Length: 510
Image (tube, rainbow, N blue to C red; front, side):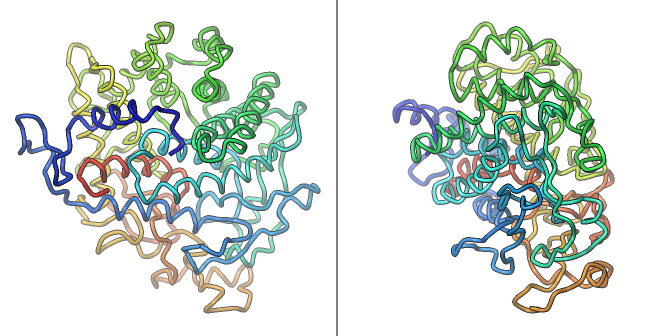
């Protein structure tokens, strides 16, 4: 299972964090409230099906040599000489979205969030746990290659500008596979800190099932974090032409240092990291009022993660992180004092036009995770005198996931392949071009734009892909050229995996 818990504590944890006990029929039964209107005995959505698909999606994003058990079968091997330009092996990993570039920054964040999903909710995943672990390992195998040389991290493969000027399948790509790295002369504490977080979080997943691999991950995480902390700087300073505007580090690198230290503390229990957090937390922005959690800004995630050490492990020295975490939660609760979140008329959390669904999935995950921590500590959130219970957090998270799955004004699922109606023209090269099996001949760089600009549905279904989503008025045009709304990304799906596991379990579907 990848969780370092005794069987007894796991049983207690599972029993208490759903806030319900399971009856013989497997559905939650609330004490004295069997028909509570917020928790119907039969869910409207098949969360289990959505969970399965949310993980299958990662197979469609794989780069490298595909295994024999590959489930998205229209994909083939790609990027088999990645790294050759620098005489290193960088084959593998994930394409981040609808293009053919491997960006290390969002890939590492995806890995951290997939791992966190399994750490918190993997015990509920039943048959999907192996698939989730394989999705994580596909990423960590690559991150180990990217960090193999001490003092160097390879952070990108592919020239994004040239890649974006072509519309071609990953199997056909002939754009330059340029390799970009950070080192002490061109540091990148943000991408290095996130990579350390990813390796540390993943080490917890493999601790039981593959202790040797787990130890390798944690040793590498320690080394990478030391490098991130010693040579400080934002990676987009030295690599501006390569990484901006795609994955420019807008929030600075302080959040990743705090986040990396928080994960190393969780993975190693080494007091050095606790001391680092205590000494550096304020300087690294622990108390800042930024309420956006995603591939660029980790402050909110670090607050929630560190609040667990206070709430559950009773680490008094981290007590202020509960206050910091509460501030974020209060910002999301509609109608609460300090509430600052915007919602669409249909009820979707709305942060920004470009790939808004990533904030919906990451916020939903944090709400459910914090609800779990609060429940085990018998605590609530205090929003300026208004008490917000863990149950309220779960209701808000469920509403967001339900909107994503089709409870919205357009009755459209924003997960490809889930439900009767979902996006047909997603901004994704491999999905939009005929597969190698159907069209073995190479499709040249510019020839692909004929498909990109057509109105016909994508020939290949990228099962489980969650796309950018509707605008602030709940509108969605389903246009392939509209990358802000129609492009999927690994970091949209990663936190959703945990949220769906929780919901599938709490409605007796797993």
